[in-house]
Length: 140
Ligand code: THU
Image (tube, rainbow, N blue to C red):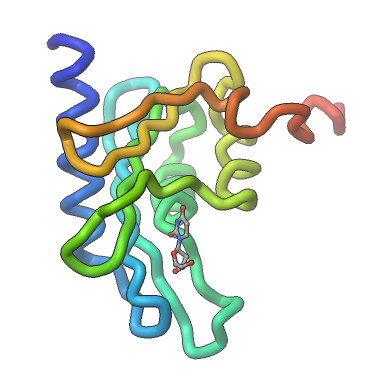
């Protein structure tokens, strides 16, 4: 499949995941689609809580689902976010999610696809989003 078609397919899945967002407090709906090295895709949405700090971002939902199913290596993630029916901006992943990404994604290879729609998106490498990261290798 062509690279663009693959990226667009992953964005469609992130849009699908976004429909499940549980966001009674922020009303900011986020969806993520995470592709493993072997091509499986795990979806995630943000899940908020009356105790605000207990909220989980869409990206981490997708990562934790995948890791808990035995996956450890990933190719890319597509992220979409915005209020209800409008996605006006690219949804930048928060710092905690970037840190989770560097735990499991290669700094130079792992791609972060930020989309407003399947036609309008940007692709970043992890090293661009979290330079000077604290890496698992620091603890070896
Ligand atoms: N959020 C995500 O799920 N991912 C991001 O990349 C940024 C923020 C969520 C957390 C919270 O539920 C809502 O968006 C507003 O911060």
